[in-house]
Image 1: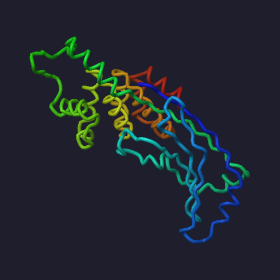
Image 2 (image 1 turned 90 degrees about the vertical axis):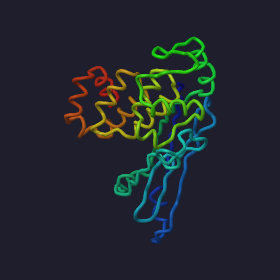
Image 3 (image 1 turned 120 degrees about the horizontal axis):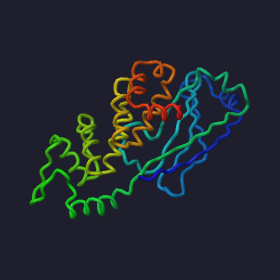
Image 4 (image 1 turned 120 degrees about the vertical axis):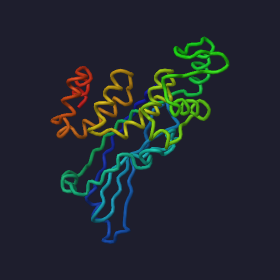
Length: 255
């Protein structure tokens, strides 16, 4: 896995005057964008910050991605990432003449073709399957058929059916980890970050602890950071601290 990082700082002036210039009709709107920014090591994808203003009811800030989207649009709309309508705090925004927005984007990516071409061929030729007997057929005894089928589907197509992923993501993650199908493991981690809640957080922290899941760990940190005032006082957090103390310390440092 490779991680690319890029940042932007955007100073927006005269916002109050621009807001006042909007007429009273609901269809009147303005869209402002920052300069596009990205990473020179990953030029196919760029981002830009956006401010959308619609008189009386909308003052929204969000991040827009341009370029390919490997997740196939399964999750958040890539055109409006982190969409937040902050119209209720306009007085604070307009207090100064200039609004400064700063954004840092971290993106994880894999060279999936190289991974399939070299890693899996080596695994097959060296007979590295710890629980399989290679005699023209492969027997996998510790995973249900749905997880095995999903892994095979990923080998051939580079993706997994959304419905299958929704029903069996944890099992697919486990088989991807065992056989080091890193792109599939990453896809499962991304999917699970969108499922994190108070009930699942302990289980997902366990996956991070036992299976080395950096993307899922980032997702847990973001969830806890957003909900820290409530969650850090909850029974769920007490369980995380008790069962996975080292991970809990890492999370607290990031929060």
